Every structure is written in C-alpha cells, then in structure tokens.
Image (cartoon, rainbow, N blue to C red; front, side, top):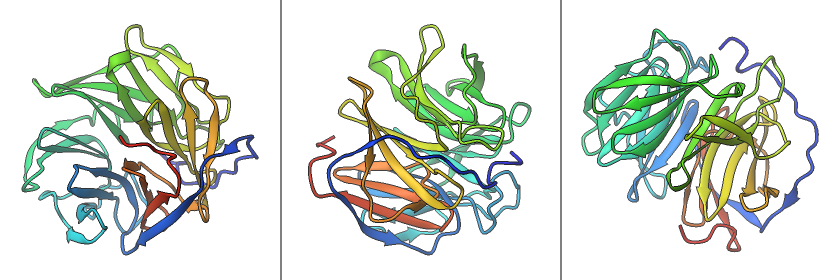
Length: 295
C-alpha cells in the first residue's frame, strides 16, 4: 500500500475523558511492532522488521515471546522465515499470524509452523485476525479494503462482500453472540477518514458507530465497551479511545503522552498493552480507577 505511511493530520475531535490512566512501563528494543496478543501466561509480539516496509518480502520479520512483565523469552519464537508479520490471534494451542500474503499457523508451545494459507492472488497486505470459532477466522486485507472468512478445516478462504466499503480495513473483533464483527479502518487517499463500526454477519451490512474519523488500528472489547487506537497522524500523536456500545458515547483515554503509532493492542486486567509501531516500543498503560473492569 504505497501511501500507508505518508504523513496524515487529523483535526480536533470532540471527545470526553475517562478515568485517570498512566503509562506504567515501556519496553524498548523492538524494530516496528504491529500487534500483541496474550495467552494468559505469555505475550507475543509481531515485529515487521528493521525497515518500515509492511509489504516487503525481506525476511527480517519475527514473532517475539515475552513474559507478562515484558521480559523477552524468545526473540524468534515462530520457527519460520517471516517478512512483515502483522495481525496475531491465539486459539486452542495455535498462534495465527498474517505475513503480507499468507496466513501462518504455528504451535503455541514450540513455535513450529503447522500450516500456511496462501492469499497472494487476492492481497499483498493481510492485516488483522479475529477468531470466530475453532474452525473460522476473519482476516482483513488493508490494501484493497477486503474482508476474508477463513475455513480452517479445509484451509480455504472466501471474500465477505460488505454493503459499504471500509477504507483501509484494519482492526477486527468478533462478538459471536450478536453475530457481529467489529471493524475499523486506516482511511484512504491520504486522508484520516477511517471509521469504526460493525458488520452484521447475517446480512453483511456495515453500521458506523461514531462520526469521529481517524487512522484507526487496534480493536478490543470488554464489558460492552469497544476500545480502539487512533494514530491521528503518522508521527507521535496517537491516542486511545473507548466507545460505549449502549449509547455510542466516545471517550478519549488519558495517557501521559501521545503514542507513536498505536497498533493492534490487547487488554490484560486493568492494563492496555499497546505496540508503538513507529518507535518500536511496547507500552503497558495501567488505570488508577476501574475504567476496565475484570474481564
């Protein structure tokens, strides 16, 4: 995607603040990390590599395994040559990752690759992954605004044709009970016009949750609240937002300073763990009050 990392500026947005938060810890030493997931014991981080070239097959990408405090345990956990890994997901002892134009499944205990699914005829920018069930994943293709449904039983995929295009489709989060797939987008045409909403998978219709547009990346849900990251600009201006699903009220989560490219994050207890993609940092943002209740 040629214009993905060009400078974009986002105008001021009307949002209110939530409970007080603070950055508890920053882990440095990565290159350009795009995603983080947790399995209850460990963290796994996708690092695109030394150069910020998310579609380059340069062989320097990696998955890093850390303990819950952020100590690196294995700097090359997945035993496979990776190029620019992005979205991560874990289900039933398997870690899934998107690497440009392929979905890779690896054993969560050993990092050994179990199988791969080739998407090269349809995209060169696979991004996020969402687990629907033990047989079904959803993956986003940011370069051509497409959403794919993956059948793990026969290692195949099909496109989900949505009634409205989602520019720069990126983050995904499944709400299986409601048959909804929450989704956001980076935007298009060098404009911060990405949106946040959900797809009703019964009829593949998209509903926008807020009029606030941005350069959206990560998505996570807890207690009827949807959390999302917004780069704001391709520099150190990133913010975190929450959306109350009951009334669509949007809140800006207070942080000590802007984040340099807040990417695909995870919530663990009262902590949001956020990859700062541009600066190669993993930030642990904890909350003084019960902004995020027990998951």
